[in-house]
Amino acid sequence: MLGNYRVYDADSHLLLTPAMWADLPPEFAHRRPRPVEVDDSGGMGRWSSGWLIDGRMQPHPYGPAAQGANKPGSVMPEFGATADAGLFDLTDPQARLRRLDEAGIDAQIVFPTTLYANATEDSAFEAALMRAYNRFVGRQTRSVAQRIKWAGLLPLRDPRQGCEAVAEMCALGASAAVVYGTAGDYMLDHPNFEPVWDELARSRLPLCIHMGMSFPPFERLCQSRLDAHAIGMSLPAILGFVAVVGHGMMDRYPDLKVAFLEYGAEWLFYMAGRMGHYMPSYRTDVTVKKLPKREIADYLRSGRFFVAPEAEDPMLPAEMALVGEGGLLFGSDFPHGEGRDDAANEFLGRRDITEAQKSKILYDNAISLFGQP
Image 1 (tube, rainbow, N blue to C red):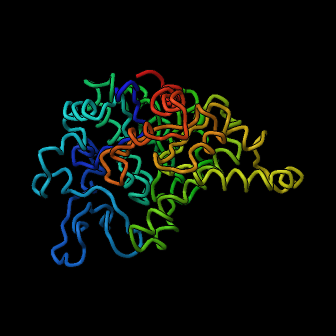
Image 2: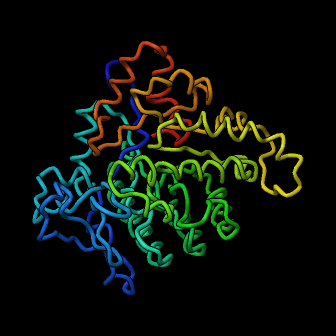
Image 3: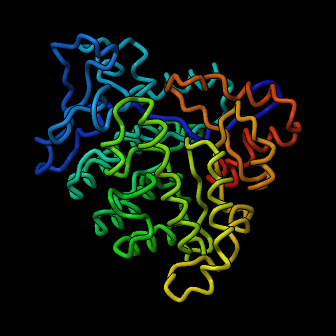
């Protein structure tokens, strides 16, 4: 607990680590991500190492698809990792528990690195990487399952493996499924993915749509980390929102709960306003085939829609009015150092929301989404 408040961290991360692909299928083992370090690294700052995946290094600081993410030095001693690495990548679950205790966090759900958003164009290899991750995190959380939960990666672009992955993650104890704003070049509601969505709906797992540079055309626009955060990693939220809410997925799957994580929440005002403004004309246009049955605002306040605002967000009270008190989540983004390390206390220090609302953001709403720890 943090003071008198229980805390459920709805968005923390595991750093990429070689243990995650230890059981890749034999046909993909030679293509596993390889740790690399740049010899001529002048001017690269702390981004002089990365993972070689299908011929390119990620993260990297310059040129198309530049972005920040965890590096080998965060988890591998031979690259400079510290003794704390095991709590970052969950190779030491007990160390992670100790960190939760220090932070006053009662329960936490872990998500993968955003590098999975577009690691490869090969859908079969992508599915193999994602399912290997799911097996790794399922094993590593087994002994700490009362407090550390996890979301399993859903390989949409290989529908057969996507359906198998749903069953496998349920058997392994996942609390949610995670995708990014698109599945490569495809919107999330593409007809090819319907068998996977049907299987997910049967599983009753909630769907988390997480920030990540998932839409390849955005990559060439991103020449720096600033571009990555402002464009490549953030704008897919809009594409995911159109697919899930605008194209009627929440109607087709009336029990599906959906959360948008690490995108912030301010963008919802624009999308709800734009789509709501044009909705009357869409409904009289015979050429618009995919439409929600209700108004956009109804889905946001349905009790099935969740979003994680930043703790310092000045628009937080208005966002609460938009999605309802039950729709806002707290996420620490641990172990990323983007100024959110003390986000729970930032929420507690706010004077523009009530104590009851703080309790909902910090704990109760995550229970509504993921279930009891």
